[in-house]
Image (cartoon, rainbow, N blue to C red; front, side):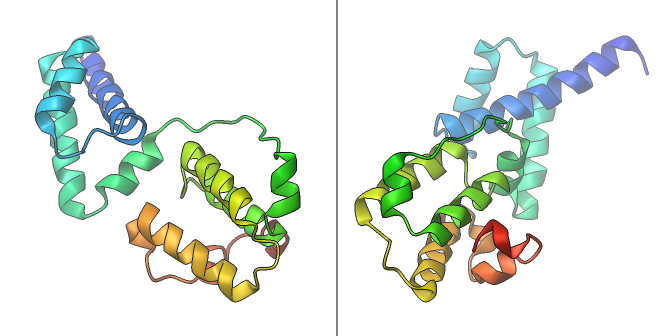
Length: 166
């Protein structure tokens, strides 16, 4: 493979990563090719790299997993999250651990998980039972990650040790 071919291959993947950022951080619709193309041109990507990235997007959309694929591509943060004192007091411990686990598994983006926890602090979920927690998380994950809709919390977190979310 020539050096030029290798750099184009790297470039299109970087363009896909930029698209993931545009879709999940800036709210651009994944099917808005014109706006995505304009943003990528502004970021300095070549026409060949942009075309390859958009072709990848089309193939991912045909598979039915475009949003999930873009979410997985995003850079993950490795920072340690410090719980807010009010979270410790007003959010049910199982619910707090479940949201944290979902964020760690990239089912919820960090910013979405933060907004969710802010809302839960206001709702005061301390007296929720397991059924209410499961129902709430099923609703949230069903909207946030449509491919997980209909799955129980237990089946979603089955591979994780129970002490991670109990």
